Structures are given as structure tokens and as C-alpha cells.
Length: 332
Image 1 (cartoon, rainbow, N blue to C red):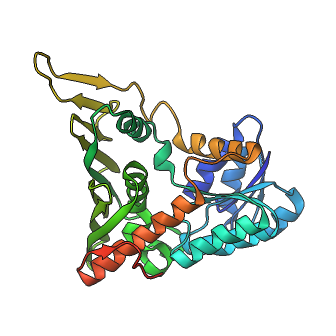
Image 2 (cartoon, rainbow, N blue to C red; image 1 turned 135 degrees about the vertical axis):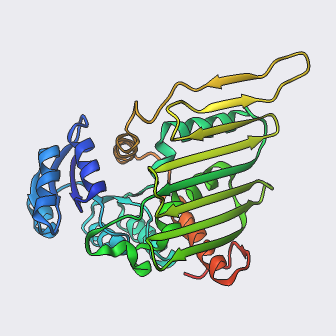
């Protein structure tokens, strides 16, 4: 499959590196307004570097394009690519408004092309293993979860992350990973309640969200931009018969602890997988390309991505009003 990449920052270069070594895939072109960034992505993928993405499409004629531009530009590029009959793999979030996200989904469907949004957490081994453990009933019915995601304030070209109208802020850009995962884990959502703390003196944005699901399950999420330590992710999922914990600061697999039964002893089940053994971004894009080839449904659909945007917006609405937001009453 002939693949091109638009946007050669951190994520674009990551995809270039992975696609460049993927069997059955040729990266024909990479494009970025900054020549040096395009050159770096070209070097790791064997592609030709461009500063004009339209020229790249005309000359290289790709079948699929990976979009890694800033979030506020996602809709513009996805629609233009769909109109050219090209399949699109786009970084998350799908868009910064629900209206835009749904338009992207609708246009791609109308044009007969596939749209995939990179909610990569579903492809991280520890998160996928935890999901499988919950679905198998290993810890009984899961009723409570805590998710935490902390990192330094992201830096982008022209500092676009600092502009809420361009990045969507910490909930839309960072916490949306855990919003999508919690929705995947627990299903239909009933309501959200959120708070956001920002500092005008330092680069800090801290969000807390409580998601209440129709099933009665509760998920508490923390997202933190401006964290002084290393990038950290953690989760704890509690069921009626046990608990699953993960902390990225610990070099270990998912730790599943089942509740003790009469006459028995506590047991710990180590799931032998680690993010250091597999590149989830490789697995994610390989999966999307396989879906294009086979016409199969992806692990994360465009509708799932729209739902994540809808929930993130509901969280923003709750934080601004100080009141819970029932799903279905979200502004775009």
C-alpha cells in the first residue's frame, strides 16, 4: 500500500519510522511546512520530502494518508483528502467540535473512503490486557476505575497548544485518551462532572473528571499538563472479585489481584506484556491498514472518536458551569 504522511512533528515522525519498516507498505512521501522536519521523517521512512502537501499527492499518488497536523486543522485536511478519494488515518482528537467530527465521518462515508482516528491507548498492551481481563470476568463485574495521565506542558510549532481554540486544552488533547478507554470499558455514559485548574504563572492545566455510566460504573480521571516528573500513566480497575492495577513508573506487566475465597489464598496473575516489547503506534496503524485491505471494522471506529469528542466537550461544559452534564445536552 502506498502511504503518505502530512505533518512531520513528533507523531508524524513516529508513524514514518513505523511505516517505513512495515511489510507491504511503501511510504512514498512526507510533507511538512518545515523542511528539516520533512527531511527527518523522509530519512527514517525512505520517502521523498515535501513542503507542499498537494504537490506530494499529485506526484506520489498515495492510497492512504496519515494526518499529523495540529488538532484545529484536522477537519480541513480530512475533508480535502476524502474529496480526493483517499483513505485517512488521523491523529486524535478527531476535531475540536462534535459538529466537525461528525461532518468528517459523514463526508468520508459519502466519498467511500475509510476514516480512522488514532486513539492509540486501546493498542497499548497493558491497557488491552486489562480490557480483556475485565471482559473475561477475571475480577467479576467491574464497577469502579481510576485513570491518571500526567506530563509536561506540550510544545508545538507556534505554541499552538497554549491556545485553547487550537488544542482544546488538557481534557480534549490529553485526557481524551482515558475518556475513550473508559467508554470502551464501561459502555454507555449517563453523565460527567468535571473541574479544571489553570495557573497563569506557570504552564499548568489540571483536570479532574467523574464519568457515571448507565451500568452504574464510575470512572474518575485525572489529566495534568505541567507535571514536573516523567510522563506517567496509571489505572486501577475494581471489580466485585478483584482489582487490576497499572503504573507506568513500575517496569512490570498488568497486576491482577483476585479476591480471596474461603479456604483459598490470594493470588496475583502477571500478564506477560509490556509497552517496551511492542510499539502500540505500529500495531495501531498496521491494524488500520489491514482494515482498509480487508474492508473490516476497526477496534476504534470513527463513531467512537466522535463520542470521545462529545464526552470531552461535556466535561468542558461541566467545568465551566460547575454542574454535572447529562449526555445528550452537549454543545458543539
